[in-house]
Image 1: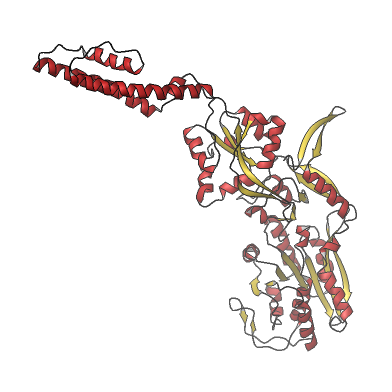
Image 2: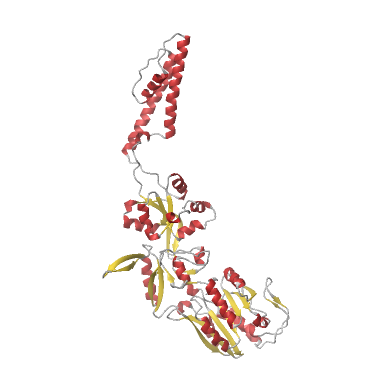
Length: 571
């Protein structure tokens, strides 16, 4: 399981570091890194033989290197002077003093890259305070491993009961203490069948002298999680879900007068197969707000991700997609399903034909024709007045009469004015020719419009959304606190950022809706566009009636589903 697998590769590093803490030759300088602390004082004489400094790093080099972060308090400053010639296997070494606010540690946890080993050399009270504040403040560290270097076994016996209630599953906390050179006490954390972290310990002797002891210790410190969790011995895992058909469907049914949830779907089949293979039981817990959730600025979390952080569940299931903020809080398995995202709405209705007689031409064309009728009537009247004044010819009529007869010509109602002069006849001939062409085009287009139903123009892609929202009165929506919302919310440029501005942010309930009610809202609301995973959109369309929905041709953004496992991070 992903979160459990994130807790490897700790103990070999731990053993090396502790033995270097235990003592070294007198050395005039400790230079941990070029950008960190340098201590210029002599160190106490070491207890460990030279062979220890050679054999343990060679064992370490058989594993991938880690980043080392050393945290100490005032009571343990002298122990730092024993650190010299640290193994090159470490990717980097940093050093920080204990502070009450844990500001330095918090920054180190957030910026830690790869697997980081946090070596704690503090008093018992300060060590407990570290883990208490990390849990309270929910500081997260990617693949953070913890090693507490203690002075003797009595300290370990006092510290272990205080730590067991603070450590989450998925975090390896290890204790190492030396009573003498030949007695090395090692304690490692494991999760019991009730999901509670417990410490197990053993004393090792002559680690550097016996390969068998070294190999056994290595297996304890860096266990094979495939073997460790291959048989969970009937442990009960809590599974957080949402109603997200067809991957996970929740249906309320009545059994003996009581409403019960009935589960089905692809993810449920996967869960049952894993349960049989890994020998665990499971209890399904439904999210209260039926959202997948996200981290909030105030440190809280909503939806299923909030249930993970509050230790209410072990595994989150059902259409779970990785996002940047979710990855900070939990581990994900390898992807097992890929999907695209589409836009759905009500099936288009036939356009109103009340004004179908105007449909053959656009409004601009009709405007030009009206202006042409008025302008042509004015021209004929002016020509008539000129001929009447210059040539003493009879006028063809008033302006209203001439304009009305021009209009009669275009609607095939004939012409009741007579013209004798060739100048008048040329103008009328040109107009009659235009009317002939106009009537042929108008009649043919009108017949086509009336013969074939006309539907509203669809929204086939994200580029069509601005037109639909701004000019046609559509409302754009998606699932609340889902991957679709985060996709647009965290976009910094391009069409995704432009699309985010099209949602209704003044009244968020209009745009960000509960996922299992969204498809019903598509049918109930007028002009509502809903962004949805393609598979679920098709499944819900079959449920409500596929003829009632319009699925866009365009698909975008590959959508992947994974299992989200126990909390990853410091604790």
